[in-house]
Amino acid sequence: MHLAYPAVLSALLFCTGLYGVLARRNAILVLMSVELMLNAVNLNLVAFDVWLSKTAQDTLHSGQALTLFTIAIAAAEIGIGLAIVLAVHRNRGTADIDKLRDTAEHVDDDDSDGDSETARSEPAEKAEATA
Image (tube, rainbow, N blue to C red; front, side, top):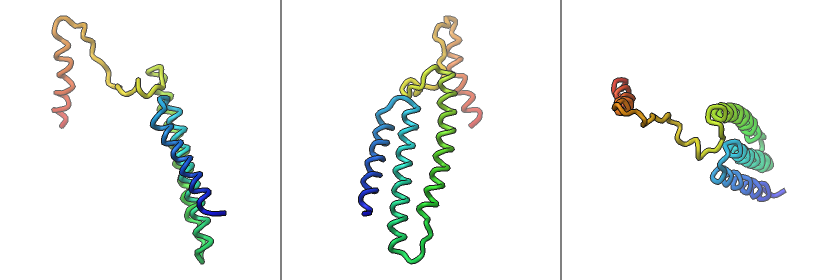
């Protein structure tokens, strides 16, 4: 088999994953797109390992070993990513990435006695005191 076939398939998978990361708004779909991109990299690693092992005298199978490390890292990433998404969904009620961009807590402007000004300047004073 030629090296071009898995390379083209890997490029298509990677571009599909990249489109999914850039275009999707749901955090779980973004994580799935990142997994698709990692699988494209794994396909490239194994394809080049097989291609290089045909031409080289010694076969170290370093591409396959790197693929195993990538699979382990992807499993950890998806576990931590899903835990974060579930925690955010419990707190905010949505997994929409556009709605999650502003994660700071808002100060109510309903105070009429001027305490809102001191509440806004207090975090800045704490930041200056810790710096």
